[in-house]
Image 1 (spheres, helix red, strand yellow):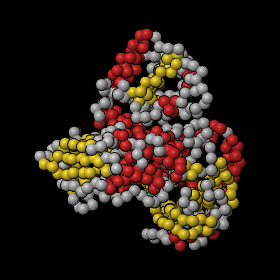
Image 2 (cartoon, protein in one colour; image 1 turned 90 degrees about the vertical axis):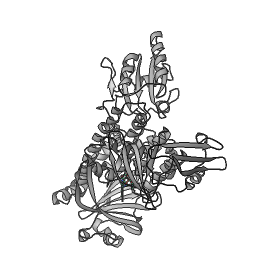
Image 3 (cartoon, rainbow, N blue to C red; image 1 turned 180 degrees about the horizontal axis):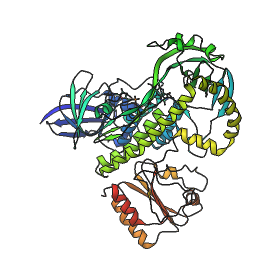
Amino acid sequence: MQVTRCIWQGFTPLSVFAYLAWEDQQTVFWHETLFSTSLASQKGSRPLTYHWQTLLILPYNRDMSRSEEILINGAGPTGLLLASQLALRDVAFRIIDKNADHTTQSRALVVQARSLEIFDQMDIAQEALRLGEKAQAVGIIVNGKRMLRMDVSDIGEGLTAYPYLLMLEQSNTEKILNTFLVQHGHAVERNTELLDFTQDADSVTATLRHADGKEEIVRADWLVGADGAHSLVRHTLSIPFSGRIYQQLLFVLDCKVNLDVPSDEMYLAFSARALAGFFPMTNGRYRVIGMVPEAFEGQETITFEDVAKDFAERLQMDVTLQDPQWIAMYHSHHRAVAAFRKGRCFLAGDAAHIHSPVGAQGMNTGLQDAYNLAWKLALVAQGKAKEPLLDTYNDERLPVAHNLVRTTDRAFNIFTSQNPLAKGFRVNVVPVVMQAVLPFAQKQKFVRQLAFKTISEIGIHYRESNLSQEDPQSQFPRHAPKPGDRVPYIPLQEHSVGIQEMVKGTKFHLVLYVGEGADEKTQQELHELKKEYSDFIDFHEVVVSDKTRVLYEKFGIRRQGYYFIRPDGHIASRNSHLDVELFRSYLQRFLIKR
Ligand SMILES: Cc1cc2nc3c(=O)[nH]c(=O)nc-3n(C[C@H](O)[C@H](O)[C@H](O)COP(=O)(O)OP(=O)(O)OC[C@H]3O[C@@H](n4cnc5c(N)ncnc54)[C@H](O)[C@@H]3O)c2cc1C
């Protein structure tokens, strides 16, 4: 046994942490010396303090084999969210990325409502709102004429606390998540590349290469490939990634745009010869995405001048492009994996699904993969849940990915098809139909809500999942949320109790609608249940009163019953009776009691 490294991971005016690792070939023992105050007590400190900590990570010997619980490959938005969620649950993990820093490119520009709800659970939604800007409208310009403008400033009103599209560059989203991770005592190991790995029934053995060229062998219980579209994890696992590449070449450009529309509105412009999307960014610039002009289609790269020249003429509109920051040309793909899990390895984010930018959902879907996986992986890693729980990650997220790829494919084809018939339809028929139908449809609450639920991803449910169960004897009205649904948003009104606040945190929540009070036998059973499961479950007893009546109504409880909420805010099971034994048998299927 020998001392192979000493990492100083913290240095603040108040505290110094020394982590000493003694390793022999097989086992790693960590000794944590605390000189002044505890890490937990620092959680309220300012982020600057934590940058000090990450700066002070000293070089160490990496040639030895180490054992970790979870290895996350890739620190894009997906990997960062997964790591943040594991950090909240005190699970041992490492997160590595071959890049020296998080992206500085704008990339995904919209943070959807469901992602903001997740950020809310982590208390970082306000920071996202501070850095971002709410889109006020989306519209269509045909042959230079603004044909349609749809107000989206509060399109999802009543459905979520975040009823809009938040424009926020991916660089900022990653910055927020990075800071969160650091504030919770972790940091991405940058300049660290996963070279290859193997797995057996008990562990994953991975080879990492560090910036200095040294290689390190890591043993982990689980490996998550959040390593983007070209995922090494996916390739190594030989998981099919079927789909296709679009013929149509696209350019993506960040620049200044002279366009006669407000800077907080998004527009899609098309003519018979061209198509472009204008997405304002928070720094006064625009993301412009469009079809590469035919004259440049054979080229390997494209320049700003290639695009800017004749841009207005091709679109037949009054617009000029200036001061480019970056430009790229690419073929969009739409692909999804055949499985999100193989043995001890998982895929998440772009590693599992890629599609055209239509709908601005790529990054958001990755964030939600991570949110779905994190609590399951944490419970299994901590020995609190049975391993089959992990299969539900694949069962729940695979249909979401396939559906997303299918719908974005359809939309992309409508907008980009070069078929003369389709072009004619796009320029001549679509705007007329939209002009006739949309002003009417826009006023219909049902249509607005449906559109918002789809695009914001708050409508995603897991009703078909093995985890979603209800007592067949139960009786609920049609409007009541079903097992698998996301807990509905109930605006906090005067005299009501907020369900969103109630189901916050990292545990399950058992919301017991006890009417005027549970009978003695039920109370005794609940008492026993709490003793066994209070590690995982927060219990909330809701006695009927003027303050709580809105909850009884929205959740369709007539007299008594319960809703069991998962840590990711989806409903696991419900019952219109307080049947504690049935609930216990549900828990025993996947949880391991204390
Ligand atoms: C130019 C561009 C423009 C885009 N525009 C939009 C848009 O407008 N709207 C939208 O929704 N989406 C857009 N996207 C897609 C969006 O950026 C992705 O959906 C999002 O980044 C996915 O996040 P991720 O964490 O899953 O993967 P990534 O962000 O790709 O992160 C993967 C990480 O894994 C690391 N990695 C990979 N292999 C290894 C390895 N072997 N070892 C260690 N590290 C590794 C990479 O360095 C990277 O940091 C755009 C993407 C690009 C490239």
